[in-house]
Image (cartoon, rainbow, N blue to C red; front, side, top):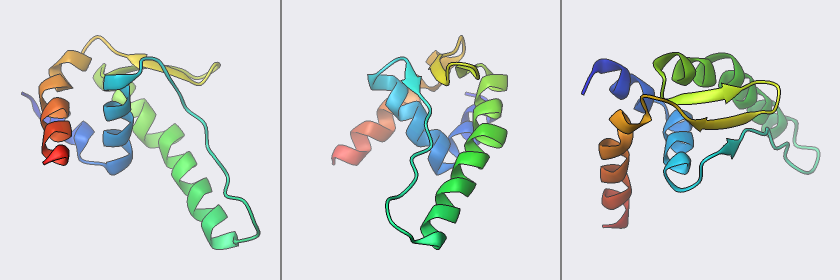
Length: 97
């Protein structure tokens, strides 16, 4: 296990995406805007979307854990995804207990 695996899993949004890829490959990345007029919630959602597109997805793509098609917004498991599988499966198992 190398430091990139732990860095990839250090952020909640990256972890959620990688855990989702365990069950369903490919994934589509979409930023869902909240209903209503709550500007604070809208700003937080917008900020998360920006972080995903400019920080989290490029990082996971650079590490090889995902392959991200920016045009179609599709994410598939990358060539290094199997390095993470034992950690991800351990996280899933731990969440069940």
